[in-house]
Each structure stands twice: as C-alpha cells, then as structure tokens.
Length: 228
Image (tube, rainbow, N blue to C red; front, side):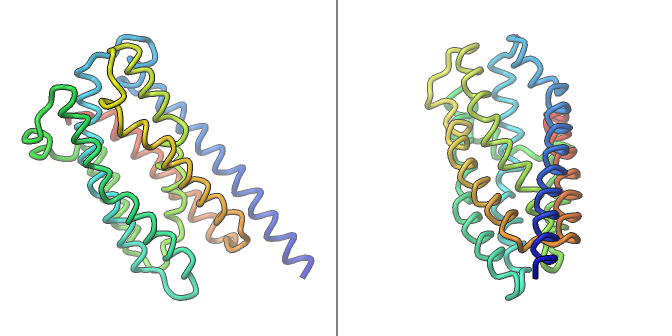
C-alpha cells in the first residue's frame, strides 16, 4: 500500500513538472506569433483584433462537439472523466456566440463571420481533437484541456486589457476574452483536481503530456495561420 501510494505521488509530481515544461515551450511559441507580438509591442490594430476573433470563432464552434464526443467514449470505470466532460461541454457550447457579439461590436458582420472557414492551423487542431476524442477512454485529452483552458485562464484577460489600452475598446467589445479568465480558471481548477486525485497512472500521464505537446503546437499554428 505504501509503495503504491508513493508511486502515485511520484507520477503526479512528475506529471506536473512535465506539463509545466510543455507550457513553457508553448509560451515561447506564442511570443513569436505575429498577431501577438504586435499586441505586445503596441502596434496592434483593430483589424488584428477582428482577424483574431474571426479565426478563433471557427475553432471554438467545434469545442463543445469534440468534448461531447470524448464524453461518449469514456466507459463506466472512467465515469468521473465522462461526467466532467459532459459538464464542460454544456458550459462551453454557447461560447462562440460571445465571439460573434464581440466581432459585430468592432465593425464586423455576422454574415462574413459565419461564412468563414477554419484556417490551416484550426483545421489541423480540430481534426486532431476529433480524432483523439473518438478513441476509447481518451484520457490524454486532459493534456489538451491543460493547454486550451490554461490559455484562457492565464492570458485572455491580459490580451483583452492590452487591446482595450491600445484601441480604446469597451468591456462589451472584449467580452469573450474577459469571460474566459474566470470561466477557464474554474475549469483549470477542476482539471487540477483530477490530475492530482491519484487516478492518473504512468501510461495515462504519458498520453496527457503527449496530447498537451501536440495541442500546444497546433494552437500556436492556428494563431500563426490567420486567414490562410
């Protein structure tokens, strides 16, 4: 019993360190993305912000769909993960509507937004997520959530504040990003509770880290390939 407990604690601690390393690499990639680099150096334009919303919307529409698909592929021994996925999908399935309102509020139209398509990075990210969600007991998707929800919790509010500072935008024009600071912080808290609960073994930890690595790369690619 003591050896098993020690082994579980080691997996949990090692997983946290490995995910932290993935996040550090992800942050470095984001710093090199042109649209975010312009935001950082103060040269961002309203067109940058509209383009970012336009491209994010196409991927966000799919978010609750692949989460729901993942939920359907968890068996009874993974009931806790299935329940968490169902709850998460329910909470996020209207998120794209916030992007639509923000987009219109900064001069875009619903017609052009809804006629848009995923960019090259979004296609790759969405394809990977649906493929992985179709696997039996896709526990690795916790790695995807670590990246996606972590981005909202750690970066969204700062992006919103910076766009407001540079472009004079109102809170109602950056609602999607501001909302996700709190919503995704709650989601990351739920995720951390699962990751530290002792139910993640060494094999699952490897899957979680690998999925986090892939999603981090594809998410950065999505932001690099705006409009392509």
